[in-house]
Length: 474
Ligand code: ADP
Ligand code: MG
Image 1 (cartoon, helix red, strand yellow):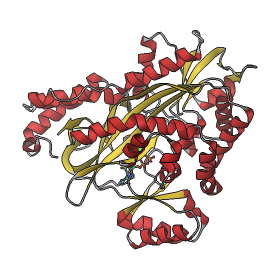
Image 2 (cartoon, protein in one colour; image 1 turned 90 degrees about the vertical axis):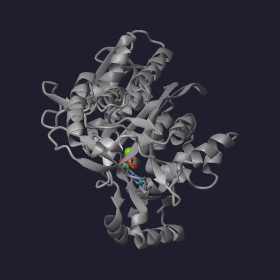
Image 3 (tube, rainbow, N blue to C red; image 1 turned 60 degrees about the vertical axis):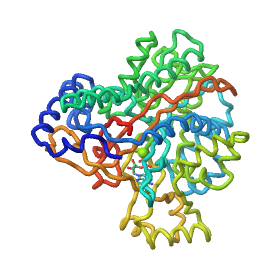
Image 4 (cartoon, rainbow, N blue to C red; image 1 turned 180 degrees about the vertical axis):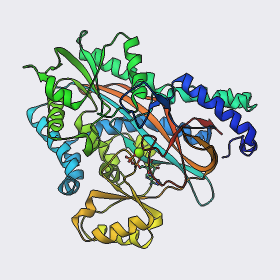
């Protein structure tokens, strides 16, 4: 599975020259992030971290991931419409996890009132690693699916060009010509634009709901600019703005400062720290509205780790996607072992199994954004402490996926250039639209490859651990 640049990895002079070219190419291409010191100003910016070289990805697994994306879109959409399933699946979790419980309460409240929304837009990203089996054959295994605020579709639209230039500098023009074009930002924007059109009010705007701290604004601007290019107005607002200035009319149309909002695209709202009491009220207002929420709160709940675990139970996929045995088989083939820690004998056994062999597993709470999972000794200690308490049901247990590492250089501002042992995670963006009961769009919209040094068990690009990459198919 090695990429054909093992030969240059040890050539220090060539690597240093290529790194200088790479950084300038990234800045020119717009692979940008605001700085930690000034996260809300664009006066001084830097390049987003990325690999010097593209990483090898098995072609068959890459294609498998694209093929199964439409199935995952269907599945998420089906879950979001299945109250009984969400209720049943999250019942134990919401007893102990306050964040999921609050989301769930809004979900129920909005359903009881009756949905004003009739156009549903889903933008998700299904993430995978290439698990190395005993015989060395890699298999595509899903890490998770992100149904809210899935990021880096913008910046990753620009990394292939940077890596292409690096390869040329290193005398690998032929290989450079094989890098795939990739533009998730456009695919995401096409989905938003279509949802905006179906909403049916030409003067209405698209609202990006953004965090207080906006380091990753350029990633969002890529999508925003695609919308402006289609003459769709975009406004950027925070929950606080919605609380202060948002309102609904009698038909529950959403207004912000006098402008009707057709689509609310969340790049915020996925972790507890995004919410105070006012923000929860703002969230409720948005959910009650007629505007297309991307995602609506049901779809956010469909992306919880607990739902992921429940999907792996025998018969669940079949019930959610009746009459689609092929889609079910394609989805199931990507599942790693997932285990419930619900109270009872079965959960007791699972907890004991993990405590006895903690290196085989990952312990995951209902959180997003990286850096929350527990591994090895820490996993053992935490499980040991909570194994007899209902607190354990706020976690799920998952088999640890073990990819074959490869060597690369991770380019990060103010960091020394050094070779690292790395593993990669492939994400596929999915976009779909449902109008009432009818699915009118269902697409895979591009990919994202992120790579991190094996010394870090966890953490994404935003968390400063993983970096952007480009797949080189082998
Ligand atoms: P989050 O919602 O915080 O992104 P993830 O489930 O994606 O949670 O886990 C975060 C990171 O932890 C992943 O990007 C991956 O590096 C690592 N990870 C998660 N699950 C596994 C697993 N089963 N095996 C190996 N690594 C994992
Ligand atoms: Mg993740």
